[in-house]
Image 1 (cartoon, rainbow, N blue to C red):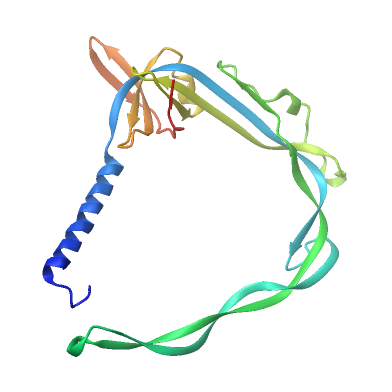
Image 2 (tube, rainbow, N blue to C red; image 1 turned 90 degrees about the horizontal axis):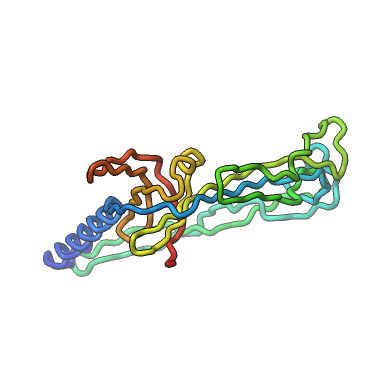
Length: 236
């Protein structure tokens, strides 16, 4: 802190910083709950289909199987080189303080880079399946694919790549506000349409968690499920 600042200013700055920190902590921990109804259960599944393809790449060396195209100088990294020093001072009068500060410059270091041809598995298409029931299945167009023998792989051979699945719930508040909530498959299956669940919101009214709610003689008991990431809400 600058020695020339009055104590009242210093105290005010500290108080402001503390107030901001307290506000941030409150915003992070604040939660509110409301009962909502599940209006739809949705799912999507997709699989990347990869093909054995010749591609062009660049690197600092040619890997096994690569075929040389060209080479050229390119910046590999930058070195930090001392370039002198200067004085920096603060304060006035008897409180003036100076110190020596080193100066540095960034110097590029060049190496030889290579372009080459090589064969890689490349994603060529991603078939999808989706629905609004609990009969989730993988895209039929990927069922007939089998990993080729790597010893006899040829250009154009195909295989299954990464598989993706997405399960989510549409929940409706009593004010007719709809939220699209991501869920694990097990949680998605445990919250059927027209069931009531507990939606947990943060201070900005963004969903942070869903809990399975049970009403019994006017008293609510809840069993926590895993925290769910949620999409932005939308009015309906």
